[in-house]
Length: 88
Image 1 (tube, rainbow, N blue to C red):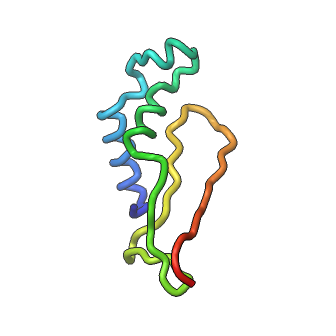
Image 2 (cartoon, rainbow, N blue to C red):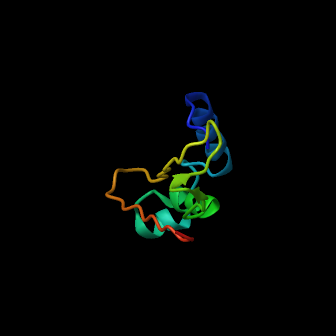
């Protein structure tokens, strides 16, 4: 995506419209962590992305960037896994 401040705000607003952080969820009720919305958002967007690499460089559009989005309602330690598949 293009990591541009206005687009980031538009994206946050649209996610809030689609899956509100204030909406009741059975997950939050069951686990008491009030982050059911974050699981639904993450499921909607998926866990990963596939991007081409050519001559050892990431192939992307002029304004495209790789952006990590964490939907959770509190800080947590996270690990990112990168796997390169292809020809040498």
